[in-house]
Image (tube, rainbow, N blue to C red):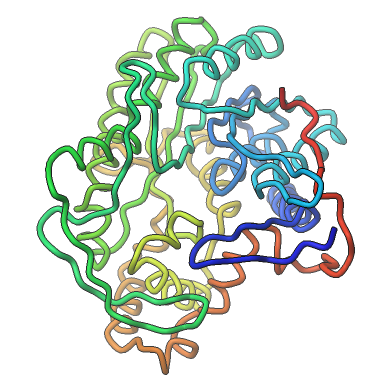
Length: 397
């Protein structure tokens, strides 16, 4: 079939298998161009099919020649209906890994469940023996906790009162004010922490440890974001921020728990990037479009793959102590948060409107990044040609 993008708001309902494949190949080629990394050789990536998780799997495999086990929750294409972008990304990754003789297995299922954790442990025992790096990169709006059986739903709300600021419809370029109502009660905060905090990360690491499949000196990394002050009310000081605080506290707890095997747990604070999740957060798309403009002009713009390759080569596996901030976090948002860059973005924010955003911001770059998430607007892909929407992932059970 011929697949075209079908969108409503920040949701794209279609994805392109050839576009996703080319996008994965582009990331692989970037990692190869940066040279070998003396990193982990047996890697588990929880949330491996898109964004930072996919970039982590690519960097592990094609930067360090690592065997990788990936966990994702994606839908395959059926005749007449495309699968999810994550499905096609995973199919492409496995294709290219196989071509280079790299072990790559993927488990498709609910990573929050005990069943998927058990399946992953069995796969590690059978094929890898143990893992020396565990990447935790899950993003979901709800989670069923296997401990109490309850399903929790996260909310994106400020805590200290109504929040009003600018936002942009990145499809039309219209800048407008948006108001977000505060949380109704503490339960909304605790539910968000249940979904987006460190609870599931801890369950994964405890299960892997109890099964004896964590290597001596294992590292585990979860991804987070802080952002600028202008987004604090809706992000870092809102419900999501409480979840991120819990994630960071979990990292310290995990490091203590893994002391006997010299394990280390870190939260990596990454830069603002276009994802389907970030596109849904009011204020963030406008901030990102201005940020991209400034960072590109300064020559320090990065996408997912550039961020993760730098995390691996300059932080995790640089051959020295891992640099962290005063709270023990790895900061690869350092270029975004440079004082000069934030000052320029802040000045642009003050004057941004529907009439000038196309000039002072990088709305086209934002749109391109959003489209590429689903395999569209990728150079070298013939979107007028028919493609096989039923592309399979060989190792998924």
